[in-house]
Length: 279
Image (cartoon, rainbow, N blue to C red):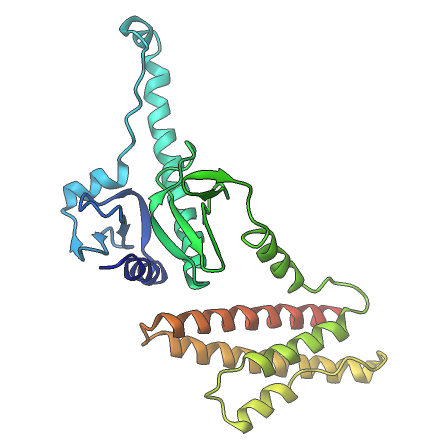
């Protein structure tokens, strides 16, 4: 199985609710093990179930730390040694869950997972990712970037640009935000509605977006509130449509497109919710 196929397979399992563990399979490909909600541990490259005993070891495994402390010094600190291991194990599990979530998001955005892991001592076997638009290798936990194994300053296109794009989608709540939010919701519906919607469904969704450009009165507030509710129902219908599309498909491109569309629809719902609170 190629590295590209391995990355796609890991993404599919992450979407199905699997958790990426901080250990790799001993098949020699550097592929992180995946654990299902039921506790089943697998290697996506080998498509083999790991025996339960080995799975338990893989899930709770901690790297051995070499130390020059002599036996007398170690004997004086038994309590500290006994409490540090559970704390370290818990930190690894929490970081592994967070890394799984972040890596899943990046894979949906078209990033590729590499066989190498982050060299940062605080990152427990976190696989590096590569953005197709920037050949730098990137760690989702410490946000460090690497080129040929050497750490380099993060590229603005890797992190800052994505954060700016995310912030740009958030419309600030101000007195004049009604009009902006309404236009945003209208734009989202017309630009990202699934191509499978017919003209009637499309016109129904767009017409449901409220017009908040007129001055507020009791009458307009009532009619606008109704329009907002209609728009929310229309966007909810679009979300349900994408959910139905996602369930049977295993095509990576279709999954990416649907998830990006659902993210934009969620932003439109948030904008409409702000409009509703201002009425």
